[in-house]
Length: 207
Figure 1 (tube, rainbow, N blue to C red):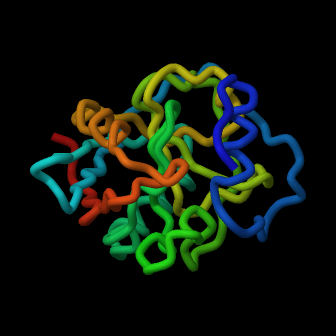
Figure 2 (spheres, helix red, strand yellow):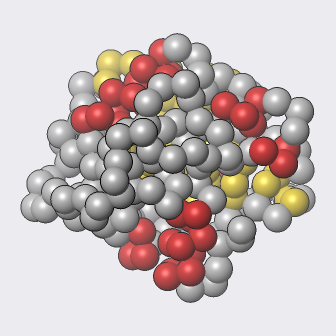
């Protein structure tokens, strides 16, 4: 399913195709939204290194463990275990670049975006932080509590995403590289024909 031209349809399409599987912890009730809490940068950052570093460079992300502690913990664990190594940014459109699907490592592009890690899904940790440029969110399926390994980075203000997807970080360096990735052509729908592949995601102490 492709993201539509309006924010409402964009948010709906994003929800329905973000990741495969259903939550093993949820009844999908409307989650509580954490309000009025300012994000505080974690003591560690994530550094995304792309395989084609000459073209795409690196992307540095501060993590908000005070906003989404469970998702930050999951993301750090997956990165340290090498789950993201070799995955691609399989979904690129006017709103986001999205990656983190272990199935994007295989030779079947048709399953990209439908997979997740072997770890349990993460319950929703919604907040009222606005989805501005460079926000890092947890992709999910129709179930609010189905976030797992996939993540996305917003290219611009996306009010249709507010209060609907867990925010767990923000790009602090390399947004120009995110925009370079967003302009990759040609694409088959939203998937780059030539894979934009993550070499590794490192978790490092905050400078």
